[in-house]
Length: 365
Image (cartoon, rainbow, N blue to C red; front, side, top):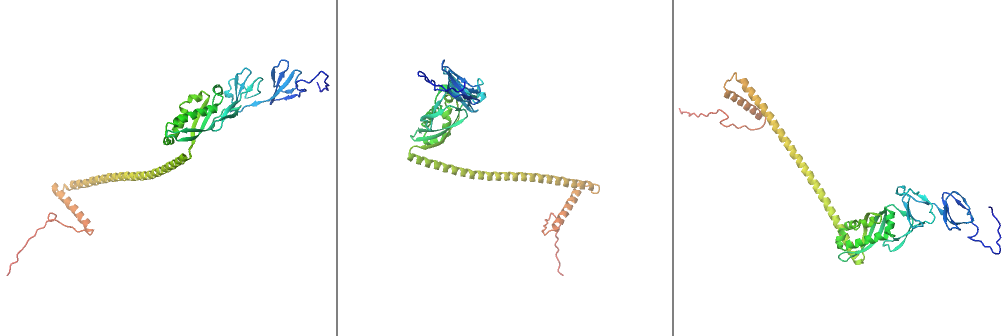
């Protein structure tokens, strides 16, 4: 029907807000329509220019909900049953599409989580859940065994792996995690002194979430790491003392590092000297072996010369002792030739020469 000009009678009035405008339904939008006779809602998603009928009332124009790979939403139907929609198709159990219109009588579950470093107010409104691993920064007060009040700044790296488990256990996940690690830090820090805390800082951080992992897995959460990024004393005077302790510890570490460097240089020098002495020892051993080998070869050659000389001379000089004497005389001649070429002095003993002394007496005439 086209536009009509209507005049109200004396007993007539306009119901349901008067005339209604047609809605263009496309891929990005749908229309939630209520039947005023039955009161039922229906969602019209067919692409068209939708004109409401005589008994139709347009309740809402709904936009298409698109989910990224890391996003998820929780829907609650008219019976209160929760449905989980994921942007990652691998997480969808019933192959539901990642882009959809909100069905009739359904609503998106909104959670109010605690925010801030101390999680004091539930001012974080969460409709779309980020399923990626993320960081949480906290600030915690605790006391050591020697009654030093510390303020710890921690960094928590965590990830929600199961929304259905999480929503069934808690409505304030960051608040639960903060209160848990806070109670654990208070427990462990109270058992050590300030010096012990400074020495066992990383060990304490590991024990805080390592002792009770079931608390986190029962809420659908994985804790990847927990680190204390900073700690200070609540009292100014104690903080100054702590700063002096930290400075002295740093200076001591620097001195130790310098001493270690000097020791490493000394050890390197000693190792070089040791290697040098080992090589010298090996060289002397090799030279000794070579000298022995040379002497053996020279001895064998000399022995062959003597044997050849004595053997060849046997025909002319049958007596062996005479032949040996001839050989010794030749060796002495060789020695005299070597000595005569230099400036050395030669001394003979009576055994070396055939010398006789005779004295004669001259008669007087």
